[in-house]
Length: 232
Image (cartoon, rainbow, N blue to C red; front, side):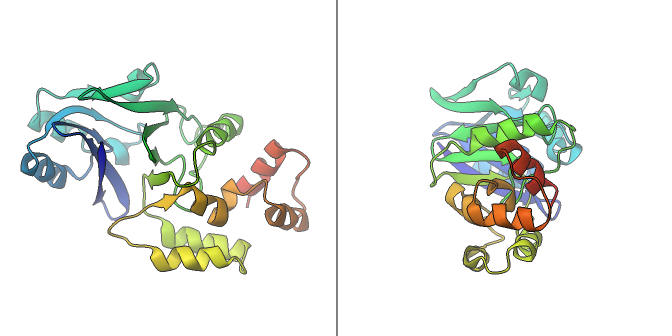
């Protein structure tokens, strides 16, 4: 399976996951561009779905469903009850990742995580659900993947979030390296990048722990450190 990224509404990022014949649209707000790609590549749009139910991610659902009446919309309530989606006998894994919202999910294709607003490139999403403990458990789940796993997020906030990271840790050389390779036409990171540049994922790093201590934030347990980095 392959993944095609689409940009819409300035900083939103949506995706088409596709096999030789079939496709699934995830946060498909770039309707015209997705339709062009599907038609050019003779694909059958099987499913229309989202990483979570915020309107900026679901905005393209109706238009895509109208264009492809045989496609099956999958709302996030139904996704929570599923573990996989199949495309031409290839499997896309679905993980429940509550935190940003209670209905947030992430999609795993071998070597790739589509994370929506759970994990951005350089930061975590806001905890609109109010349940920080669930968010912590979701993040721990994503952190188990291999370092070379590609992270495709729901927005391009890279420049803003690298400013945020540099304010916290101005001598972090990896931030400069990441900024140099940033391409607004193809926005991604690897999990290794995230462990190097993302303050919200570095709560077990000794340098970050020192920074938290210097700010008078709690570091006694892993969860307390997570709470502390989220408060930065």
